Length: 372
Ligand code: KG4
Ligand code: ZN
Image 1 (cartoon, rainbow, N blue to C red):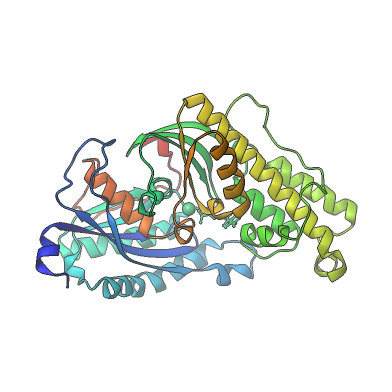
Image 2 (cartoon, rainbow, N blue to C red):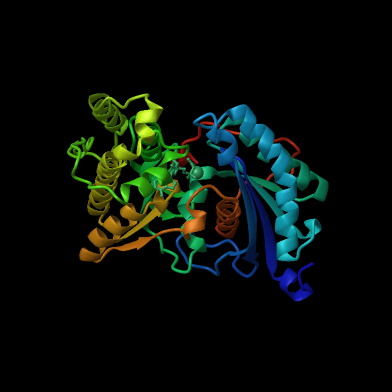
């Protein structure tokens, strides 16, 4: 139980994330004195009290990718124990929760329905409202939980397994799409290239690790749409180029060749070249977005935001131009419940939360962030 005086001045928001292969639950405290106000003001910040995460990576690894039905079933197993864990860590009772937030989309329909169903049941049993949150808004606002939060307005580079977007963000709920991928997302480019190289799912972090020992100029790879004159991306051609190199080496679809210790230096070169191509496009397009908008601040969010080379290159390029770069804490880059509870808190804070008491819910597997 929270101390009574703390309780009086705070609203507690429980956040549930279940859009893909991570079950995340978190509790965020929203200072009550920061009532509805301007979306661009900087009122007292929501505070993360506790969060817990279960990753299904081990379960899906055997299949080389997420199996939606298995994902849904595992979310069912995890979500209540994780909720209990979070409440215990925060020293709160279920009845202390004021709002139950959940990821409404985008994501896997069955997986989303688990989080939405549990959130709806909890909220209804407590007589509290619930709130469906856009997953990408969670990613986009997640740097507000870091020690060095951004200020509005900023350019956001959203780079996850399913999305690659550049947005202009003028405040909570004020999102303008500047450009996005026309085919694969940056995370997909990492994951699909890594799979071709025989690396486990999800390939991004594995490819980044292998790339550490490689030379980034060893293989010629395209920088798709670098000179397209707009802020869109395309990564499908890059994966095809990686495939072509592996065909030339005679290693495509040959696990024993890909695992051969004598081939690891060449594979490290290919990984380094792939990573360099993806990162160069992301950095240059982000700089172009900053130039086009005239903004001096950029936020990087989503799983690929954990990539070290991306951070180094973007930090270096922005430092030279006097531009500030903000990231979520490293452990909040990939999917988590904290960003969902935070996005709900920031919507409440700015008077933009569509709370509902009805014991009905829906999910939106496909959902455009700029349209919310
Ligand atoms: O945001 P996220 O957890 O899930 C989605 O909403 O998609 O992002 C997952 C993606 C995966 O494609 C994963 O390979 C990639 O983020 N990723 C990385 C790194 N860590 C995660 N990609 C490159 N380097 C990393 N260190
Ligand atoms: Zn995500």
